[in-house]
Amino acid sequence: MDCIHLTGIRAYGYTGFLPEEQVLGQWFEVDVKLWLDLATAGDTDAIADTLDYRSVISLIQHLIKTSKFALVEKLANAIANAILQESDRVTQVQVILSKPAAPIPDFSGKISIELTRTQQTP
Figure (cartoon, rainbow, N blue to C red):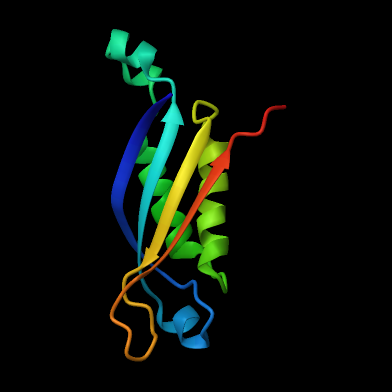
């Protein structure tokens, strides 16, 4: 199966376990991998035959900006589910959601959640 990778999607949001994270907010970074059939688009060179990834980027940024969850796991899951609902072309999605500056004393790394979800068949 073919894939589209979207990396480095950034937005400022208010998801976090600590109360100040939901008030002050923080930056989030998202990478997604979208599985879909790109054969027709490869032949036709038509945007109508593929996924317009601008809409996926916009969807992710909107969810980060407007969601207020306690857990980044919930935000990552919401992103994956929204992408699958938005496009029936996408058969599977992988989301890597990162907090590049998690408010943890003496920790300068980043926290990442990675999950994969598959389109449910009716």
